[in-house]
Image (cartoon, rainbow, N blue to C red; front, top):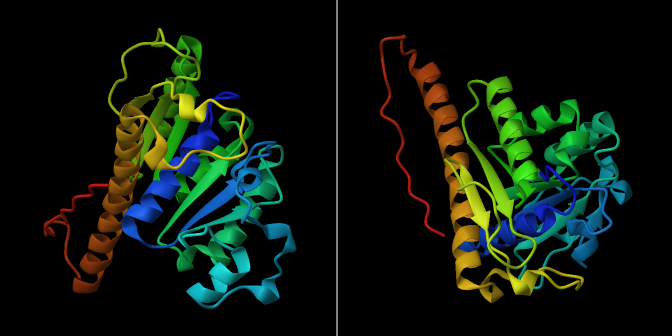
Amino acid sequence: MPTAPGAGATTIALLVSSLIARERRRPGLIISASPGPRSAADLLPYSASAAEMTAARAPRTVAQAIEALGNSPDGLLSCLRLPEGSDNPDALMRSWTRAQHDYLRFFDTAVTETGNAGALGPALLDLHRRHHSTILVSPAQRASMDRGRDLAARLLGEARGKRGALLHVVVATRPGYPLVPEPGAGESLVPFDHSLAGGGGSASAPGLLDPLTSRVIADVAATSISGCIAALSRRSRRALASERGLGGSDQLLPSIGKVSP
């Protein structure tokens, strides 16, 4: 979620989703809910539009889902454009919920790309609660970084008890080291990368980035996946505890996992 225009959130969404899908070798989905004009759906030639999908055509298998949505040349990434953007938060959530119901179960991971977080209204907190990990993206400017930090603090306060990752990614959009505070806990600084600065119609693949940029993106992806594991592990432990009828004094050993993109 971008906290300001031109933050680089679409690029981050494309790189993270691509890296996760290719590392795990399992199909991933980008839900493009940004009003554009350079949204993920605009940049990916194989994207499909939810406005053209009918409930009667909802897929029942992974193969049907990929056939309906299309995918990247390597067969690992699909993109679904939602008809509503952040200018209509209620309609956005209805479209997102339908996409969740019809498609998400067929994909290993799903990344939702949105418009400006400040324009999402109540949909911002709703989307945060429905995702295992949330990434706020701010341009590397002091005022924008401070706004991103304030927004992250607000989400943490309003979604108490939610397990998963909340990351604040700060992107340098101009050459040189940005004059911003040092990244704190849960924050990452993406350096300016010439391969991402052009005005072309697509984002670079992770392997074409500068080494430092690649490491930062890999760290963001790993933290996101770790957040998913933490949230799912907690849900599994609760379900198991319910099945076994464990009391409040009983405990289950926590699941321990390691993700290394």
